[in-house]
Image 1 (cartoon, rainbow, N blue to C red):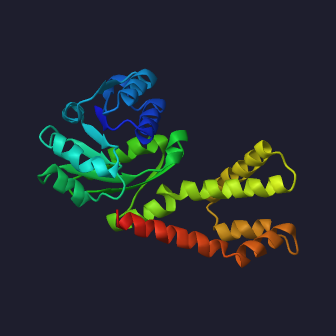
Image 2: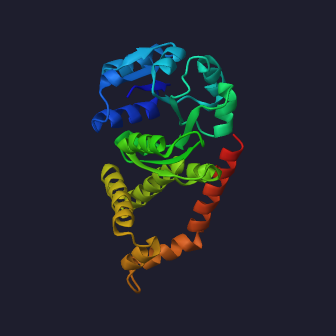
Image 3: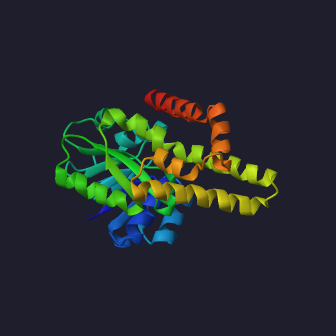
Length: 265
């Protein structure tokens, strides 16, 4: 299977690293295009893959074509590849805020097999979370093939397209919220006298372990919270302060703002 990439930035590199790391493809089955000499050279040296400055060349070559460019450049990219990409090629877009209809319109004709997805930056360490929706021209077998590719760098789940903006709010952008929380948690430990490097390690590991508990036990987060909150204890005192400061409402408002921004991109 030939897999092409238009755009060789961080997210494309994460996907390529996952595919090669899980031995789903060989470097000879990959080709990437980018306007930047630096990006092309980096991908060629790091992954041993073919690179080009010609988007149409990568599009014509690929059986599965990932679009990994900034939203403002998508129209220009689609116009440049519309006569090169084959109708049986599966086009996988990771472009934020651009719908399946946007992609169909940009390609200029109906019938293309298009998958839209929204990964997040933990894909860089193969712990990504990706929401996926597909055009009705994509068969169940083809969609499963794409999900397998996306699963090389984390978890991938199908959602209806109407929920893709919610995916942006809860996973696409949420690593930034979590990093803020880790930073604040570490600042609290530094305030209590802990060295900063150690504080970051304790805070980050606690977030990692807590997330793993949710995923591996299947228990409701509230139940897991209650397991930590002993009657009259230190944790309950901290939870009380968070509730008084509107912690949960602030997070919900942040997700809502993110979703609304995504809808209006």
